[in-house]
Length: 101
Image (tube, rainbow, N blue to C red):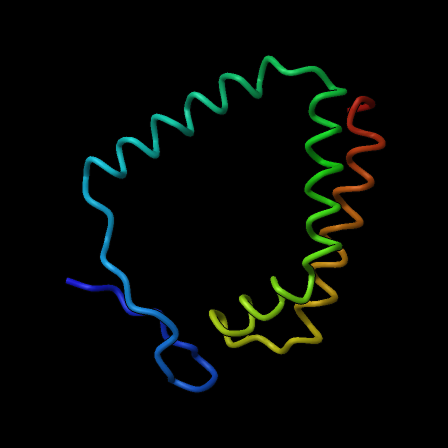
């Protein structure tokens, strides 16, 4: 049975897609466990580089993410833009101070 993504603000169909199979879900979970095991052994410098990259992506593609959030959650664009900019600020702050925690 297909899954439908509906824009709650308009009631319009955003996208229709098929659910993942049990095998696809197990595979994704296995990849997540592997990624976590690799990440937990990474240095603070490596983690800071990943946060720096995440912050750069949030800043560069903010409007793209705002459109996705607006379409999928029915939220106002201005509200989401502010929230994404706050997420960017948190990522930058954590990148600079994570070693202190």
